[in-house]
Image 1 (tube, rainbow, N blue to C red):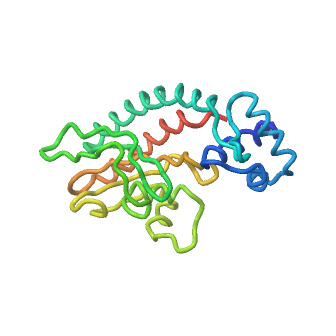
Image 2 (cartoon, rainbow, N blue to C red):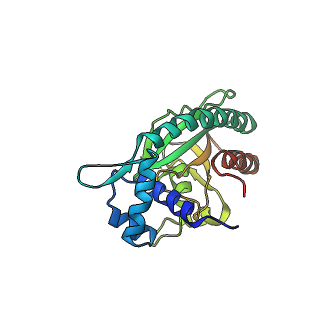
Length: 226
């Protein structure tokens, strides 16, 4: 695929800036692998469109333009994701959710609770736990490049495309999660996963197939076709 280098660098810079509370132009240049003068031009261009702003100490951060784009995207993504999660929950009889990485924590951002079953699993939006625990956190780690001393379930999850855990967060709960993005696609502040969970055992073949279809649908919302 042919890309426009300047645009590619600008988008990469915007992603790096979004993943930091504030980043210096030199640090941005180092991360992009370009000369500081080129990084200055990228920042100036983004600043001219309101996508970034500079603090008094020179640090670069997201600007109002980026927030406006996010505000337009979020309702569309959430509405479509809600439909996908509802379908996933109905297919599997499980509670379905989307979770994101936030620092060293995994945070649930969207949920559709199972509508069948005598005992339903409730999973609150905003609940968080360490990335190293639970199917969702481990799936996010599996979506990253391999790391030294990573948990065995992460390595296996990267190979299989999904992670299964039992009782790690709540006794008796089985969860299966898949990262939405591949290691080369992961960006700061954008590491989502989709998961199903229920009290008791999962129908693994059904959950594996259903979550794979959900990943395909959710990826279509996040990644432009090439």
